[in-house]
Image (cartoon, rainbow, N blue to C red; front, side, top):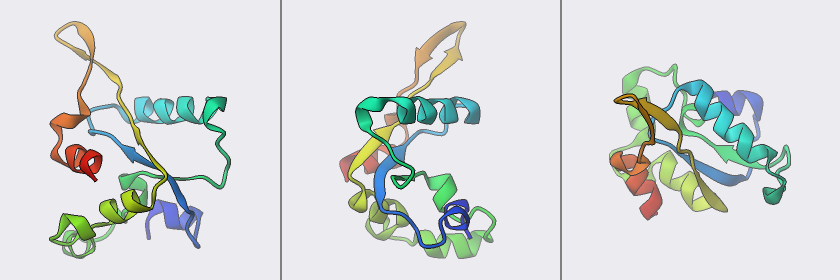
Length: 119
């Protein structure tokens, strides 16, 4: 099972689909989500489903079984299904030290992020 189904066995309606490039540290990713959740402008509740790939996909499955779930057609993947169901997309951008400077990294250097934005 995925962490999301362990925490919510009956699932939740997907309100926010989270897109990120896996460039950020996990702590920065969580800080970005917490910052969003704390923003009263968006009126979050505990029932608002936030879809994040690493929490939604069963990470402990063998590679072949996980590949079966993801499928060979991106439009039928769990990413596309969740994106279609979501009310909105949340793009996580974090600053990363690079060459001695802090610059925002473009999430759209990752093909999946481009696909998610295109959907």
